Every structure is written in C-alpha cells, then in structure tokens.
Length: 131
Image (cartoon, rainbow, N blue to C red; front, top):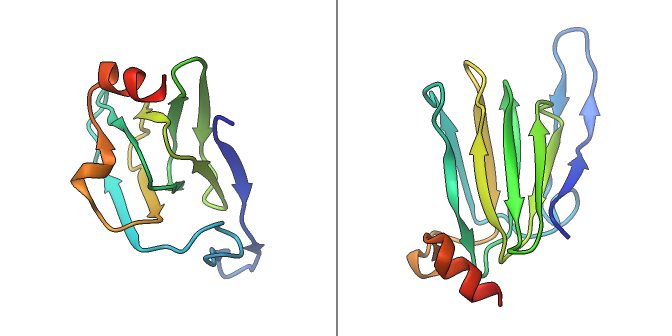
C-alpha cells in the first residue's frame, strides 16, 4: 500500500484546537525520533530517499506540502494541509516532499533512531532493493 492518511483526534475549542497523537494507538508504532522541517525555500524539495526498516508518520503542522510515494511500480501523491491528519509511510517506499507553502512545517514521527544504514539515497539503488 502506498501510504495511508490517518485522521488524528481533533479537540475543537474556541480558544484554539488541539490534536493528539499517541504511539501504538493513533500512530501504529513506537515513536523513537521526532524531527521537523521548516523554512523550505520556494521550489525546493525534501526527502528523496527510502527506508529499509523505519516507518514514518508525516504531518503538515502548519501550511501545506505534497508527499509523493513510490514503491518502484506505482507513484501516488498526497497533499498534506490539515494539522489533524498525517501520512503513514511504510518501509521500502521512496518519498519526495515538495510544493511547500510559505511557513509550512513538516513534522515527522519516526519508528527508529537515526541510522545511516537504514537509508537508500540513490533512486537506482532503491529500484534494485525493491526488486
């Protein structure tokens, strides 16, 4: 499956809304690492890699951007623009993030700690890996 949008609990309040993401409940894995990308210049992209073992959950906590997932056979794009929704990304899937709006913040909840050996950075290597 090429990604799945998961809608998180949204508590609506006139003072401001609140969204919660709990590991092994809303997010189907234990979260070991959290990182975010921001101030992405117009026309730039992020991602451009795949993971061998690490699942990720990607949220546009502010603004919007497009995530394109590729399993080597099929590509599918997701517009992320709601802070109460996220995209579940499985292992062995190439991801590219682009079309960032001004002020966009991309939050990623990752299943594993950073491990350089888990990354596939070259698309040709990725295609060989998924064969």
